[in-house]
Image (tube, rainbow, N blue to C red; front, side):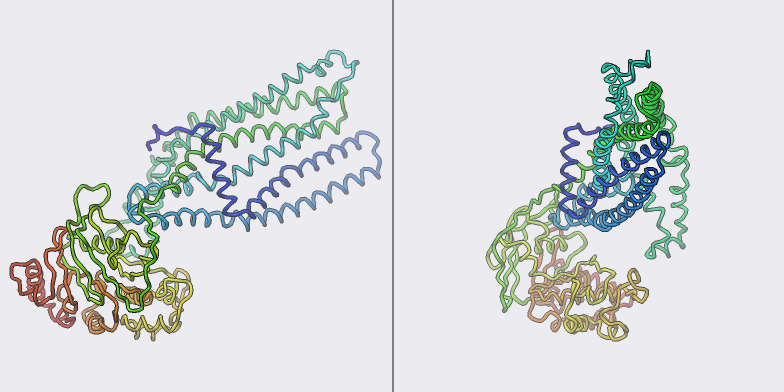
Length: 638
């Protein structure tokens, strides 16, 4: 949404989304919210005890001056101040532990957890990722969105409680009558005057809050520009810290690109930028008007009214302290109440975006059939006239694919880039559903199976696989705990055995130094072996390998291929590769071309068909090996 098109939500809509956000926080951290409520009550009401005791001390000093009474009042003031401070510290600490310190992690988990719950095709939708990115930018940049909810709730509740406390200490200000002998000042007793005075205070508070809210609304209305600059800075401003880019940064002097964004004097946050112009213009004027109304009118009216009544003899000098302190907090609470209401309305559109994201529904049908866990791994898969195109695209990636897997088969999937190989695997793993046709498992449409049960059948090494910076054992098990002997055996089968013996901490070795300075940076080939070990550890009946040896040297690759039958055992293996020479160990080969299966068979049969696509690809690669004199490595893999 462009800035000029953005509008604030109505007060009703604002109330609805803020209440929903409050319920969400209560669900995430009930103890934290209880601590915040207790701390707010305490912080809002205890200052009035000090105001009351101070007034009594001054009243005593200006009156009877009893040493015993003064001693009691001063002791009560000191003890209460000490106890209130101690209790405030304890409550603040409890609130920080239960809510503030983990607030970020809870909300971050909420957002990423939703992404992991969504259908895969929704997470790949650029609009979904843009929505999440915008939400995070709003939180990190301007502090908008769900992070602001506890703060607004605290301020609102504190304002209400301060309002009640101030009201309790100022009731006598209006009930104390000016003596008749005060002459013309007896008009202060008039109910009409008091009503006008209260109306004036309310009007001044409303006007001050309106100006303040109006000024702050500029940040909300122009958050898109704010977010864009934050994204640019967060990317270009920290390029120098990224180890994966350090070499390129030096070779190509890419810091010069960063300087453009880090030193741009006309940037949105610079002294000549957009928000600076707003601060010198309407934002500054609104904030100045808010302060002027609050100080000149609101505070001025309070002092004038209280001092006139004291001058006329309605109460003593000590009560002046109480009334000015209490009514100042009372009027400030009115302003805070309306300021917070404005802040909640400014924040409502950001909360709505968050809830729009959290409310994204899954579209894939979630079946209910339980996948039979067969000890003999007798699973048959059939693609029956399957066609597919990606959401938002009119072009089919796969057209009328028909094929079957035999149990325990080693299946190779080959073809040029863009021929549909990876899409075929995504459909098999049910990351997407076919547009036409059906995929059957043991004769039943896979959409009828429980989704999690169906996914449990597959172990996959994706081409862009991901390892974490946690320990080696945790990466192999893809979990917090792991079976050590099993993890070691899987690493050994994947060709990582010798490297494992060299690691002093073994499976407890961290991958990288993010969490431990003794961590080890693994090479691309080593990481690929770890990813392969992870697929073996899961022990699923189907194992899918997408270019599993792309980062390995020819010797390591040959070692993997020589042990392939031992690695796969009785699983059905699907192997995707651009290196046709490595497909010879497979029982069956699928040749994809322009979204269709154009050939299927063994290597010997396909390479004998001189008119076929496989023959063309095979000889193109063989010629390349000959010309580049790298055929020895490829042949070693055979």
